[in-house]
Image 1 (spheres, rainbow, N blue to C red):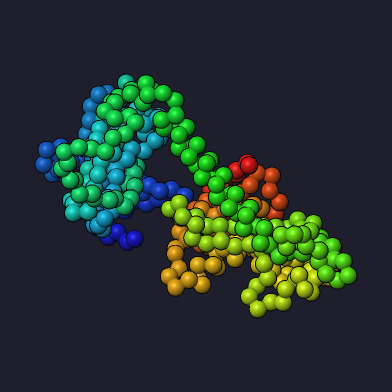
Image 2: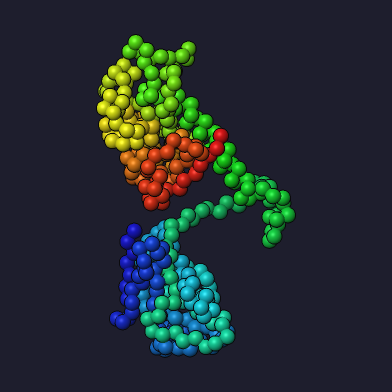
Length: 337
């Protein structure tokens, strides 16, 4: 998103972010504005008496694109150190406003405070908004809270808000993790499985006897499973159940040289699964459920998909990709069955 900014006066300063991780753009004091007509009535500096207020122009005009808005918010430093607040916090710069924004500063402290020219006095935070259609109705859908107003939530019993939400998330996580475990039963990894006469032993359900590396993954979006996967050989590969484990044959230690394997991990299969559909769903903001920590390769792939959250089984098979997910800002949850 690009926002055009125009200086109102030549010596004005364009808003800037103070750090790479800041979401707000600091704005600078440029002049004193009349609170009624917003005309310039003086230069800075100016002293604000205790209890007094003054409208400060920021020296720039912005062309905020639709459907975004710009909120004018106070700077925490001025509030905490000097009790300087924004009287109309937060203020809003609408997409159709093209004037110079003003910041109404009020002194809540007990001492005079001086606003210097080019002092950082507020911050701008941009966000996308939804503009609903208000439809008049004879009746409104009921809720558990109904018409309870200020303070009513505490009277309605424990579990109306956060507790109910957390329980719903836990129940969903448990349900989807059981699906993951069912899918994991389809895994074909034979590492550690004994062969008798060159053939892997199977039980009455055709499951590999003694198989321990059974991993599954599903991707959930809007409470629907949109992809799944389990550790299995890549398409076109000869099957390990016929040839034996390549990694055992090469005597590769567990967790190392992951690329030397005929199999794709469950996460990898699930992520690539939608690409085999006629209309591939987006993975953006989806939740990935796995019964093992992702390896470094899978973790790097996950970071590039837009997946928002990874849910793992508590006490899972450890890997070394967890820190990669954390560094990418992906949420991590654990579920215990």
